[in-house]
Image (cartoon, rainbow, N blue to C red; front, side):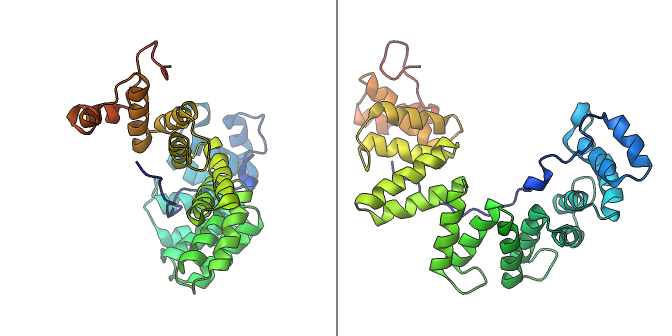
Length: 303
């Protein structure tokens, strides 16, 4: 059992920026009431109807209707609608997948300062999808999205600079953006920063590594939870504590983390006195580890 190393994350999910947390301005109105305004040409209502169909409010999820209303609002310059229309084209939801169209709509929204669209457009430039691959353009749009507080953009910048993705490698720039994203609560950044500190080893760096792992783990980062469990089990960087180890392993295992399930099975078996190392490495042990064996009532570590 070993610590999980920092992962390289390619962010592919559609990111919803702060400007879209309340996408339906006429929030107290029903879809039908918004539709009446939308039919009169109200772009905000058109976007609201489109969003209602996008997420299935009132049990009416319909990507076709969503795209129709998003387009009407997007044609009037509504930035959120332009973003969602771009997302529909990027993901091929109801409309055919068309990365050129996705880039077109993302660019229109990004030009209005829409952080999520800036982020998605940057990703297209980084990957060369729908636009020519261009590291400088990717960085430009990531920087704009990051300036609006979008932590995914800051984390992406850290990866670009640290790994030299289509730009000269810049370790200082990578570290700076990684720390900023971590301080803003980005769990992958916190996990990666914690890993860097622990690899450096020694006193304060180990304590900082544990601190960043804990912050990520408390936000539900499964690898951070697993690594904290491992550290408590081994007494590495923290006082040895089987109870804490089991607690963190269980949180990670509940998210389907295979390593945590195996480690939880071992610790639970150990708590009940089942510690035969030969049996543990055999077929029976593999089965128990795969199941994340939970001890029966009365055993230490049982639910």
